[in-house]
Image (cartoon, rainbow, N blue to C red; front, side):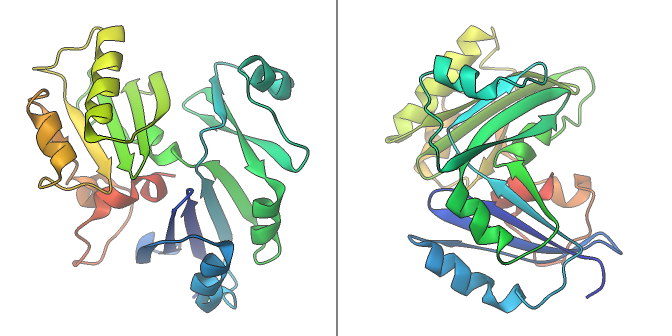
Amino acid sequence: MDNAVLQIYLSEHVCIVAIVDASINKLVEIKYFFYTTMGEISAALSSVLMVDFKQVKVCFQTEQFVLLPNETANAKYIFSQLGIDVANDASILSNEISNKHIYYIVPNDIIAFFDNRFKAIQWLYGQTGLINRKNQSINKKIVNIYIEQSILGIAIKEQSDILFFNLYNIIEKEDVLYYIQLVFKQLALDNETQVINVYGFIEEQSPIYTLLYDYFRQIEIDRTIKRTANLLFNDDEQTLNYFVNLLFV
């Protein structure tokens, strides 16, 4: 396939792989799987290793990040001030997102894993898609949340400005409610009127969603991706909310 782009999202336990035909801007294939070793990822990618991709985007999910208003040459020092040690076998990568700069730590063996298999790699922070997801209503704040196993991401924007972004470790479903309520209190958001768009591995029948709906009346899983993303999709794509961090990068 000419002009094929390979997009990979990698978190601690989940890998999502997508192929986009850039010539017509169409999502050709997308799949996800849970893994425990990099060997499983290597096996899953074996079918695409012979494809000459125009570009490979790797979205690496890590809790070791810092979002700054300006570019800096002192990211390692800033991490140290936050109590985060940058190991000798890791690198600090960075991207610009909505006029801010995000710095994140990637183990060198992960970088080498992809460098040894692909060329023309663009590294992105794992929650870039969540942060990039735009509000369809002008001049209103947007709250995007992403749930994946023990990960809760919360991104709040007003037009293109990032008002807030953070990641939280969650164990119980009540942890999700606690952190969202904490952020709402911090930013003086209204539980009754503020729209919350939900992404990640969650459905309306999920206990977490049921719990959140009791407290936030304008919460909904985003089912508008097919008509609002700048991509063409196959008709059978139903769970696009799982893949926000690949579809908006």
